[in-house]
Image 1 (cartoon, rainbow, N blue to C red):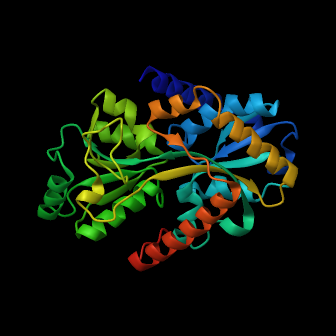
Image 2 (image 1 turned 45 degrees about the vertical axis):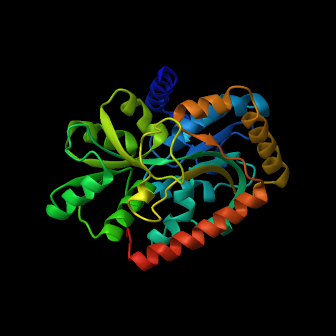
Length: 326
């Protein structure tokens, strides 16, 4: 996993340097020639890893400087709302996991944006599965064993997430409700600090995307109990499917690019073409494969329909489950 470890090191370095000048500017002040990919999450998560892989490819295709800007907070709402307010021609784009634009409107009373009104779907980027991780010294070795333990000792154990309302949080809440078990939620500002606490044993469970989890699984710092996919992962072929224990528990996550609603159509089309070419470039699929991800390349119309369908589905499920973040 040298590639992914190197990438994570670069992510940490980029986050430390910060792009301080960019962060001090309002959305409308970003230089027109500069392309800013806003990741509405802290460094180290799958959104961020995918963005860092795409950044140099898009720079080459667009022939413009491209930067990745992390704007975490509010379960992703801070970054998404920032892009929603960006003025036409600002060259500010939202590179986000589906959960932020399809789950958050049902979870938050006022997320600060309206998915269908404020954003133009541009292009899919990647699809990633989720895995259920536990501390390496935690007794359960299967999902069934974990559920049995949580039933015997309700409320004793802790699960982390990348933040309130994030996919990792909601998947565990649905698991708890489906199986009538209890564990206490500890939200973090991103998956990286949650992983640190999991390895230290201060939390016992964490649902993470596979790209974020792979380095720790390879080093055996954590162990995986199940994958939330329709089929087994080629990277972890012996890892059982969560749905085989809990019917319907599937949690593949797609990552996509959106533009503010008033972005000129020619700029949207130019970005779409750049993404298409980047996805066809030699080596990208292999980089994604090493991360545990795959290319997600729907048409713009398909992405629009997928966004609307998932928004409706998750809003209904969240309402039925009675989950509210604020």
